[in-house]
Image 1 (cartoon, one colour):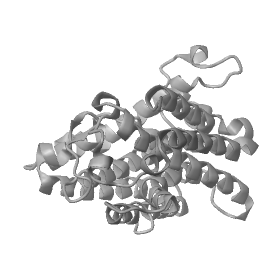
Image 2 (image 1 turned 60 degrees about the vertical axis):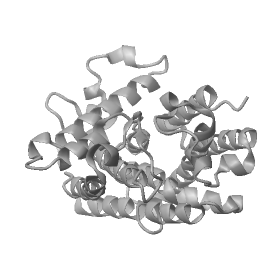
Image 3 (image 1 turned 90 degrees about the vertical axis):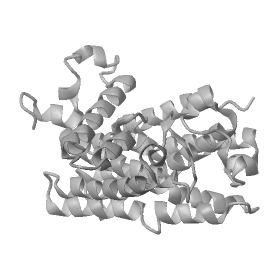
Length: 332
């Protein structure tokens, strides 16, 4: 527990709200989405800054490059999914913040490696030069390696029971394994220049980006609730939610690659078409892809409906994605 906080503060994260009190809540007493998302992302950012300490840089630029890859922007969607699922399970906020930071380190690792010339070969990420452009390709490879190690070190050092830490490490490892992000990236590379069925694209997306979304949700719940027969319904609902949400995020990204400018996208637009990469947008067409994303977000909401008000924050993240789709991914 943080000094001066109450047990309920550590569950809800209210100790980090800076005394906003009633102003941070709606008429029903629920925390306003823009407040908890902003404060949650801010807390995770602070944990990342502490864990990736610039004083440890020594004689190389490695830590500076790790901080550059991790701390410069991003919506922190995966960390917020972890916080939202953890709140549903009444997990302590200080544990969730560190788990969210570990997830964001792993996400940054995948982005750094994806941007490499041998992979997706991009020069922009979040509106800034990619790590290999700014620090060199060798350093970028090491940044990805080190961020992955630091993510697991963060989980291993949590102030949580051993079985919980093992479950969290296993979940994150699975998400980036040959059955997750690494395997998905391999499939993505193998599909370049080919005419393939939509099912193969969806399967690749579920691995490349969807696996980490799924892990983010599950890890939030695992901070407080073991996955066993007694909680099978909970994890079934969360898995359905994350499968639909993760795929929707990727479909939206496919649409934005066609419709958005650099300022909105934060990376080079039009790269999928230039690289002859089949996507949901190219196979389905933009209007159908947009409707598909909306349907997926609806299905994700239906998956958690039986969980009631406990899943309010997970539902609010869907609402944010819906709003983002409407604002930035218009196909008119």
